[in-house]
Image (cartoon, rainbow over all chains, first blue to last red; front, side, top):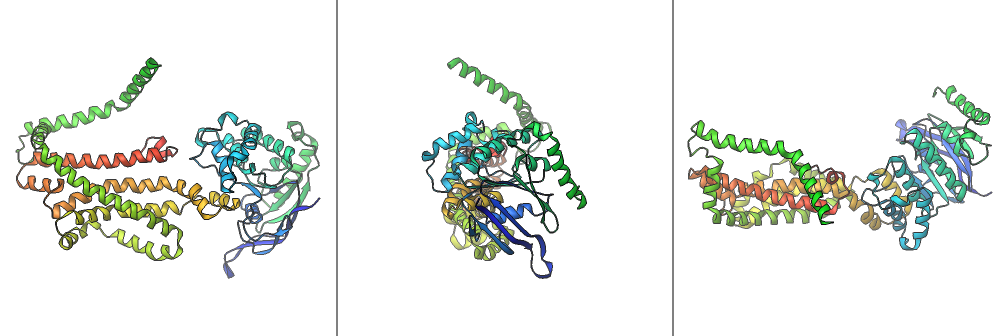
Length: 255
Length: 268
């Protein structure tokens, strides 16, 4: 399978000269097309920095990133991104926000009405498409933000803790939505999270990142069948992965 | 249909009254206290008059009051409009240009420290008693709040929206019309409203210093003639003028950014 994203000895430092702080690296990682890879680590470990560098939104200090075979030099556009703070704007409706992605790219929303409708239906927001974000719950807002990140059919999704601000129950429900969407479309996903359970449940591979400077300590192939529902989460295999990852964080004094 | 509209209106009126009756009662109490305390404490008529006298004497001089309201209103509206028209593009340019942000912006912040109203006598002496110096002074007291808020507004797009915009590959114009401009409007309106409050103050002081018409001129003359009743009538019309401008700006805000939290909550 071709590699969609290749990271080679990537490092990131902030500041200059003697005051420079090594935030990340060196990090090397290959992400295959259609893979769901989680970057799992505690806050401040550099996982968001790593994602921003892949998106071409933050300059690389050393090393290189290849995106679909081409070196990353500036912002990548064949991607959909999501952050902990969603990028829904308050002056547009849910539908208008999804269409914002199209308009920013110069794509006429009228030509994509069918795919907007399908996305809205897939996250059960059809009845709320003419509401403004402030009229929706946090979970509905993040589901709308998913649609916004996917409406232009990007080959890669870069998701930086998109469920970080939601309560536990809502997270659970949106995780299954996200998994269903991924299983259906098989886009490449890089998913930043600090939840061990979330990473194991969603990912084909989990890259465990340890802090100061951020490094990939180990990569786990999660060999569990999809879709991973509640039964999988209480299975012994799931617990084994959880234990192994907890062990790493404990040895670094994170847990 | 008509009856349900009617009952909804009644319900809204009842809600409004439930929230506001204490305020109305307090306001009424204030004027009653004023009315009767002037009599009880035997305050001389050339110091303070009761509100009822202000109404009757003001009504007797209504032609002059209305004409001067018009005169001051023209100064206020012209000065305010010029301030908006100049401050918005300047604020925009400063927000987007590093050079301007390092030169013009600190200069504006320094000038902002100077009480603009202190320039008023100079403008009168340079430009005479006419309309122009008043418009300039109103402009000065309105320009700074608008320009400073516009700079803040146009330079504070949330980071995740900036990143989102870059990930779409959109050019600066599309990013401006679709994200930066609408996102900046609420903060711009903070400046518009603040300037609307300043505008009548500027006009009144400019007229105090040197003029032969307008509400500021009127208040000064009648006070000199020991007519506090007419002075209060002038103040009343000056207040109305300020409220009208502020009301127009608030109306524009409601029409332009109905989605914003300050409009939704009805808080100002």
